[in-house]
Image (cartoon, rainbow, N blue to C red; front, side, top):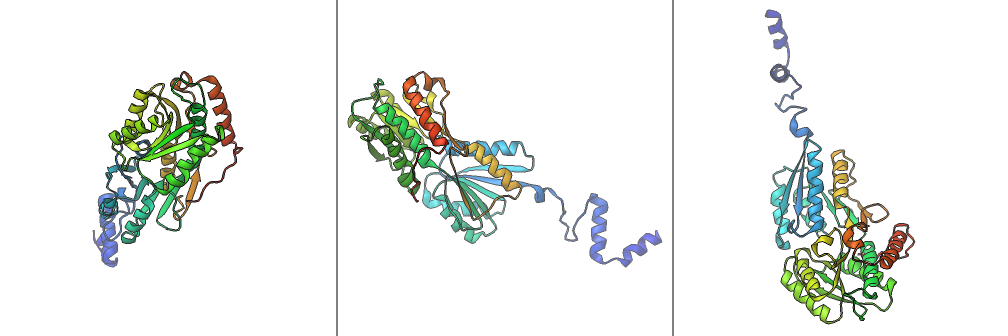
Length: 355
């Protein structure tokens, strides 16, 4: 006992504390009392910040599903899903309140307007990291973005719409007019999505025109239904929409009054068989899982933006659904398949408009 006592007496007080704690916990501990290899140091917490609501928004639903799948397969990863609502004026202060606790290693979102909001939040919380899909933003060391080539997706969906509106299909009329209903206007929509849709249609027939309308929000299905009804009366027989939950009004009206709809980003054939004539797919779930793995492994290059599309495997078209093959004639599907293959191979020339 005297020998043991003499050893402790000769050591500095901090070392004595560390040795004592080592005896209790059986693992290295700093003199300040914090374990060097404790749970917090190896855990990874993700806030999935939904700028709107999950329901009726495929990109958000897929983002949340991807994050939850990743957490389910990684025991040290936790995910919190937060629906911010539709009042954009509240988003920055709301997000600041969420990250102020220091709870989250990463904020994950998907919205073209979100990078600027995160940049504002980052000024107050410079250690917070943000990753945003469906957006482009560079030069901020706390933010990394991934931009889907939505011009490209709109191009091939527009081509399909052009084939349909000039076809003898039952709901097609002699007018060469297609329609687009948007929830709100923003740079990506105005410069990539809507122009790509019309450009693709005109690759099928240069005489096609576009009727474009705006709901004003992401949830008013009645307003979208009224717009669709007016557009059908004006000769539109094929629609696209980026309108969130409001798009349900378009689908209902198209089914009742006789028109077709092509969808961006997700499989909606079963929502209205024979009315939904084509569905693009955005591999948001796949991209989110890959992003989170890179973030967990410290491989994210913050301050950069990456654009992904058909060639990279993050945008596609659902061509094998029976509700597509049974309602769209074979000759149209053949022409579309050939066009889509050329897009994937880089054989369709186009210039991506600047944002």
